[in-house]
Image (cartoon, rainbow, N blue to C red; front, side, top):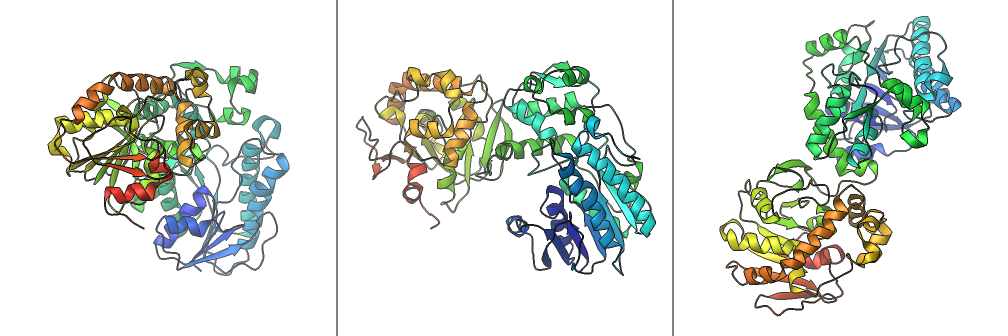
Length: 557
């Protein structure tokens, strides 16, 4: 084998395995349970040269394949660990890997992943002051260096900063999650706090190059151009359309305040410093092998999209591609194909674009599905929805079918009446302006404060839907500041525009199709074709996506 990777199912380890396999190397991946192979398959990585090995680094290692390069990316990255638990992986586990590597007859390099704040430490760290995670990393770093010298093991230590990318939900991700959910009234630390980042893709490529480099050098791998923490948070806030905090809480005060009040884990506070790190050797090495870091601000924006799409680890992204874009001057969450969609899908209330995931999975052609302004993950807009829709459609180079659900049907009808040349047909699912008014979402027991506290199960019951991920996604958005209030306001606007929407429907001169559930029929007669779906209610795209897909055209069985 060319290489073995310990900790291969971890955030860094799996990306390293993917990088090595992509270079044609034969790779042994050490795991406890094989969640790696499905992940690699999802990433489109050829696993033909992958060997899965089951082992536990907290025990002496035997019976592993002979390899040239050894990577130890294993370890416990978590706060609140017990000391014994942290030392088992971060100290004794690291030493077990080193002791085994020392027995390899053709070992070229042992690459040990340490940490940017712990490398070069000496002696026994203060576990009470630092906490189990950081103290165990310090102890492990010192122990590995010392033992490698004793055994004459060719060692390179890589010290990454906060590694970011899809699947990373700890570290700075916690701050971003609080920012997103309106729970970050002030920034911890001061205006000079430096929390450096490095992308997981860059770090994996860096690690892959290390074994061929001259021995004896250790590397701090981080982006020196990472914005200071206030600017970092502002970059993400501007990208996602939320308001950044402008006040600070000093670290000393945070240490004295109860954790229940601050929400800050005491172990994370030592990372809030203005310290800088010796990155010159890593930068020089990267230059010799042709590695270039992505711009920090761009990397942060992409990561923010990933975090929001995955609900900070609580869900899997339902549709791709995804991300925030500027539409009519407001930050808008957009999924799917922006330029050449076959269907543009507009969700109703109180949902978001995830509503369309079961239907989109059954269509063979690309879709464009945004969160409407002020709803779901999109920021509020001062412009009316039909103007926002016109700007959303401006990059579209096809004549897609415009498919709208419930409350979104009114703006869709107006767009179709004003811009018939832009779309091929109009499909209205459960158009609210043609149905009997519903008070399900405006009754006093589900007023705005109650809506913000709704769980996924309670929202499912209110809407008469099964507990599916799409409802959980909507419930998560309703808990964000302002969203529930804007849902109620949108309902009221929809009721006020009912007659106008009916009048505009008669003026639309492109094909119009209406789809309703048999249990949620129209209350107004229309001249347009109406298709009823047996057993469906107000959300047929969720409960009967295959039937809806058949009405839209070519489908994938």
